[in-house]
Image (cartoon, rainbow, N blue to C red):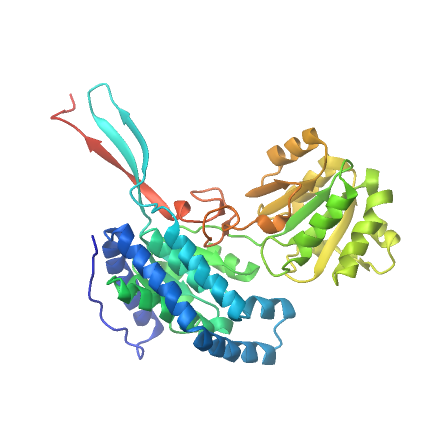
Length: 432
């Protein structure tokens, strides 16, 4: 069934509070319609949106150049420029990601459980949309496509508030999503992009837009996430910074460790799954530390280390206390020698952000302890931390990595963007 509604055009001259209230009301009306939309209609919208992205590649690149020029002028770091940059290859990956979401099974209406009571009542737990999802993000304009497509597939209306540095890029991408909704005869307000860079708009979203926002997903730096968690009056899918650790155990294969470490840190330094701290077991520091540091330095990564690490290579910069709790999102890594597995896990517990952490070892018992005892959303054994990604999990993309413990944890994909309700079938039962 395809559900359509008519929504009033936003009053762009209104004050921020009024404008955001209009957005919230339109999202709520669209969420109801979208919750009734057929899987076929949602998939048509996604396929059409992907086609529009491909057709508008030149427009998207032109818009991105405006954002890039402004970012370069303002002195944005190389890492953040990389996060902002869109080229033909990245835009095609964006379109392909939307197509992949369309190909996934529809999460709405899934029968999660069924059971029968002694009185004959048959009870079913069925997946339903969350409703209206507000996504607040920075830098990466591709989040506009990822978040919008995932919310749509899960039957949720989306209110997207991108960063000011990616304003024009996000607008060009959003136009493609709206074209998809239009082609599928779905309400255009089902995916809205906040049309102002005024920070007051974020405050209005965090208040809940008059009860019209059901959950907020922050995706950005420490200051953004802190603001969201401090001010939000609606539930939040917590996304803390990715202070990601790689621990090289005494039973680690050196060649494997070198390969995994280089990929974990340097494949893309600006992603939240990039390694930020290297921990090396003191038992193998004499054989493993210098080669590992050399791999990083040769790849163009600055290494900030403790005394033992500095002794292994004179090019290492002295680390300070703040380095152990810093998400660099750049070609910088903190390195420390620790006294075995327990010390490594204690360091991770003290300085980590419960995002993603890895152990490299051939000792299965050590690996099992690490996987069991490290309290992070994603823990890995002998694999790069850059696999901390919903697409790599087979989720068809993600709206973020949740590091909290309520409702969603780890990559937030389609399944995590649904709730559930109970359907009860009876034949005249009454309660005594």
